[in-house]
Image (cartoon, rainbow, N blue to C red; front, top):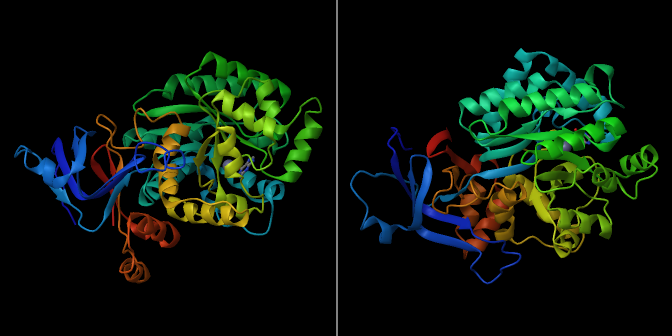
Length: 438
Ligand code: GUN
Ligand code: ZN
């Protein structure tokens, strides 16, 4: 346990891993840097240098405080590319697939976010839970109420986090108290963008919930907003469930596919993040790739709701940007190690695989790229923001035992992702300051 003061210069000594490229595309070892005895220098909240401890220590001035985590593993903070903060209280709600689950669990719990005191209480818990699980940045859906996003951003701003969030837009096929209108949704989103986008490390996501819950008029206004604010995000769901896909085809009879509805309204662009994409065709994948939009793979949610199996190889072959996400509350864990385990298992079922190196890339630099944030976060290049985590590969007796027969880094990472959970997250640092410590 390290008792930290607040010096501007802090050096973290531990095994350190970070990625420079996608190991799926550069398999020959230059995709990552691993220092078995590494040193990460963080000055005024930003990475100054990373490298071998013995090489750097010889030249290090005496004013650097040294913090050591022997036998642990330092990684850039995990990033979650799609999560719903108002759904915490219905995580693990059993028995339904998507459309029934929305009506029975998600909508009723989101109704409570008209109450700002409730929203603030949940927002604080939500952020604590992310940090406890080593997630330092997330792309978050609020509820339809603009106040829900104010409540979340207040907490994130006070804690100096890099977070993206947005108010859900939905003007049909939901309870009356949970709907906005094309005009109010546009105006409320615009006001939130003006208030929060670019404030500290916060970013705004224009968030139509899904095609089935927005009228054509609302999607029109949403596209207009996305054009007016090209550096904001667009965030929604696509092609998650077969019944949903069939319903969207009825609601938009002119559309070629579910994704085509969004394309028609100008919502496919860089910084557009789509969750799921389980039921796409080749033309959809091509449109995703050429537009620069990203797909968030949500394996715990896809298994929990029985939605389907994500085809990673097809996404890769099309050249799509792919991220990894929990999708809590349909997802069953905040933890990206648990999410990677289920990603691996989903891919096993369709004869595909996820190497441990690519898995940890996806949860860090891969998600930073999917969110177009890799100039700020995702790895330890000099100047990047000092958001990082310390993992304990021996956090349970079983893991400690398994560790004794681990031969190399890849096996260590595989054991972490198959057996690890929140207990493996020993510490989470935000801009070089400890934000969670077990
Ligand atoms: N599609 C529309 N809304 C939702 C939601 O809240 N969760 C999931 N998993 N899919 C959705
Ligand atoms: Zn979702």
